[in-house]
Amino acid sequence: LLDESMSLRKEDVYETEDLPEDDQQMIEDEMNESEEIERVHIDVDNAMKRFKGRLLSTENVDFSDSIVRRKRCGYGGGSYVLEVIGPYADETETLEQKFTRLNCEINDLAESLREQKVSEKPDSCVVHEEDLIAMLETLKALQMNKDDITTCVQSEKK
Image (cartoon, rainbow, N blue to C red):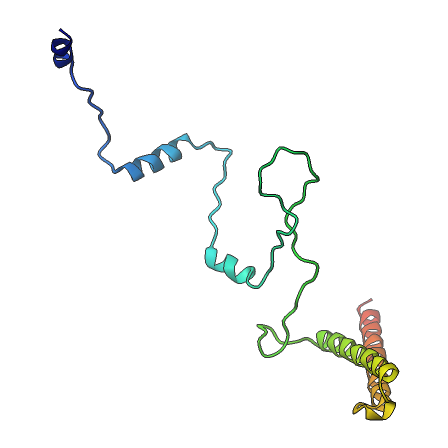
């Protein structure tokens, strides 16, 4: 009896649209989309160029999805920013950047010279303190000239 009732039943027939399954899903998504939703298309090449060389620190981030209450911590962007200057840079170095770089390098050199004087013989040094002082004085003179020019330009604009 059971066999006869099963054979009398019709098979289930599922009808689909003429489109392949992948395309059917896209059409449904587009139709269900609300007006409040704004779709933003991202240019991947421009994004790659913009963020090239950037670091993302995931040091303190918890990916475990644990429900234990902990201090929330997000992504860190790093504690410093590197600015590429020189033959590998996309842009040429401005006068202000050159001045700042030279000032930092001379100050680093002066610090290294002081440390070397304390730890070693003063005569063994290739860089002489007089040369370093002359460089610092030249930089200070450039800074004063730059400040004078800036002041003159600002007073002319008024």
